[in-house]
Image (cartoon, rainbow, N blue to C red; front, top):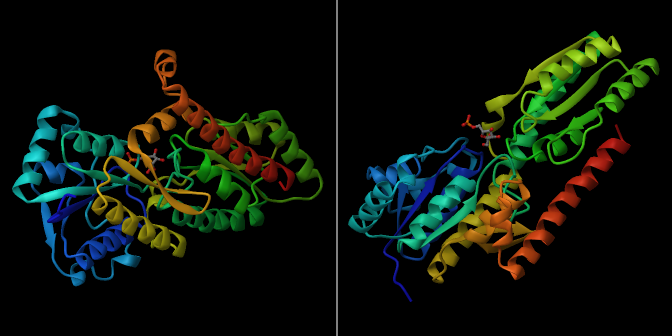
Length: 353
Ligand code: F6P
């Protein structure tokens, strides 16, 4: 079994509340097992340019459990995608006695983790993104905090909509996933929710608003996922034209990525951070830590990336035809489960609108 001297921890891609809690947990877990840690700045870029901080005591990651953003900073490093960039990163790992990496982020981060793993640096991914858009896992760090941020923002919009008898069409984040829209839409009592994964009946939504207005309802919230590129703002105009209800448009954007992590995000971040260290020390590499049916588990990164591409409709027919039949069965079942879970929520949202 490999002896680990130092483990590097980095955050990469879009930041997410709870990334610091995860870094803290993984770092403290390493220290407790007699392994030093490098906190690597700005994701893979810090690995290429040797920009990192040695963590030798639990005090070095003190009070990070509640801290927003990522103290390690983040980046979407284009240079790391080149062979030259990767070789520079590997040379820096060797120079600094880094025997393994924990990379916290989304799908782009996991592609980088694979690149390191196959070049001899054992690397483990942890899902950290507000979008909850990694198909292999039910949960990603930051999702709950982002949802609570959306709730508090939209509740405020509701206040003013109610005063003025208006409708507000709110676009929430999620480039590749409607999860933020779906969960928050239910929790704010939206009259309609539109996401890219499931069909949306625009005419029905407009009729629902008309009927509810006729029954005396003053305020309306419509939640649209960012994934339906450019749909929300023109839809707000159509609602106003066709229902006569004055309608505003709001894009919540990056405010959703900030803020103090909620209990759930701190807890999941801590569990996943500890699991990543355990897995690495157990000789595992090229895996992503997942939460499935409430249990922390792992998935091969290649498999996780493939099922993700399949679910998001990014695979070519040639790619699909070349999938291993056993793995394809698992992928189909996973995609079906994820979509069914979304459908169930969508139906509930529709029932109680
Ligand atoms: O963190 C994920 C995400 O918020 C997406 O929903 C969004 O499209 C994207 O990041 C935007 O990130 P950035 O502006 O940092 O490129």
